[in-house]
Image 1 (cartoon, one colour):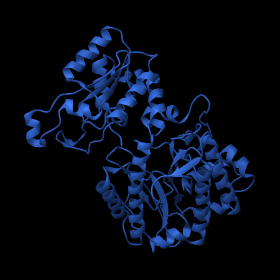
Image 2 (cartoon, helix red, strand yellow):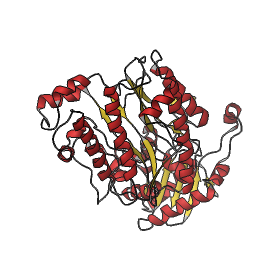
Image 3 (cartoon, one colour):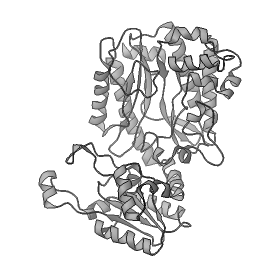
Image 4 (tube, rainbow, N blue to C red):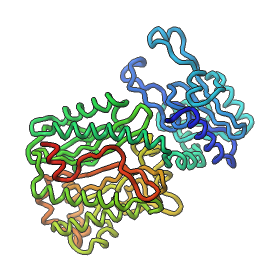
Length: 463
């Protein structure tokens, strides 16, 4: 269970890792975001790092970790009676502080004075790069910085310290991830049961989102559900399911505790794969299964990505869509025509965990550098794995007509790609198979309840 003691331990660990930097660390909470006028707002979503150190809390507050003084403070104003009339009785700042083990709570006016004093004293003020414009403007005012200089002033030491802490998931966090993965499984199984010709993509996306809201706080990211699966992050649900096509479904849930799941499956609308679809599907499935089997501590995840690409290349060579040596094809990036993304990413309180802190800060380090080759450079996490890392494993094969035509016109990698045969696949779409894993002492474990992905079990479940 994630309780007050956990938050205290996290802040103490952060303070200890930042002791050589000194100063104070400021964590702004996310504010409410209006839909169309100030009191009609979107579903509230707390900043993940604020939540990691200070619990979900609410908007309009700031958390401070004083590195030198060894104290933690929560700043915010209590609601007025005018607020309570419309919203009901609300917890005080003191009560919210207790949720994360903080006894020192003060007002926003106190916070402004606190920051002004720190600036006069020349103390270092560490903060993470903000991604919401209202927070950027607020920090610019507080720190007396130009708005366009706020992000460049973010603390790299703090970024690195937070990444190291949040990447390693505790046993309690893994419990929460298992729970939210179970919700992701329910979402996918509901779509599997209802995916058939004549049903709209919009209906299926709404059905899945309803489950995520019933068992948590909604989707962990906008649902990708489309028969045009060759568009990797297709946000549209305008189509009606058609016999003979493949429906790509990429979605997950976010839990009340703030953790995310992320699964992808490719479904035959007819309830049964055609021979051509089955051939491509089983190539992707082998890459998924074999990559999971390979996952363990102290392995360079970039190598697992290359391994998955080689598996895809071998399958595509057997299918007549590629040719030549599989290792050479991977090395030069020829497989990126079919999989222009990476094998996976970190997962936790963000679906792309801590992406707002910079992909290179999360997924790479001084030992492992990002590739510069198209496709391979899109791998979000490449460094050596540790026990407690939670990652997605999501190989895919896509037939993107515009990309194929561009590469063909340029004669790119023609020694590895059978462009003539690819003409038969322009209307194929795409296949991706994604699971969530946690790195364990002796390998890895797939999180959540099993979600159908073998050809026979998938077809059986759909029918």
